[in-house]
Amino acid sequence: MPYDLDRLAQHIAEEDYVQLDELFTRVDKPPPDLTWDPAADTIPDRRLVLLLDYWRSLRVNGQDIPSAGAIDPLAMKFALGYLLLSDVVRGGDDYRYRVYGSTVAALSGSDLTGRHASDFGDGRSLFYISTYKAILLRRQPLYVRFDAISVAEVESWWRLVLPLAGADGEIVRFLSVMVPETMA
Image 1 (cartoon, rainbow, N blue to C red):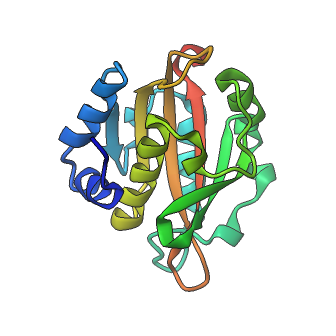
Image 2: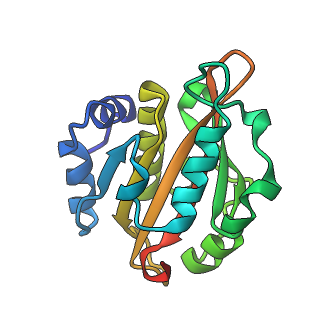
């Protein structure tokens, strides 16, 4: 059954996860756990909490989302190797990985720096693109715990996705940290 990514994203944004659960069932994985705008005490990994706190500290003058230009790589050195930076492409129809953390690449078996989320060509593309699109709709951070869809050294991941805005306030990029559950 083909998926309508816009519709799937809308359902995720509305916290209706039936279609997302079906997607994971099709690849024989348990459904992911999603938490919108998570509280720090609900996140099990220190690196994710530190990144969320850093992101929140960058919001100024009543902004709901910090500027993409405000991030400082040196301020995030605690998460190096686990950081992903992805650009919104074609209005949110795809996402290009500007940075794909070296540790994530090694553990997942592929370095996606410079590649697009649609390049996966499997359930991962649907999952990543639909969650990014949902964040475009909600304009909030999203914490996800999910079992790896592809063959990799890692069975499950903790992922925090944080939107970043351009000069016009629209989301242009996502800052994420992705940590294997077993490496907490």
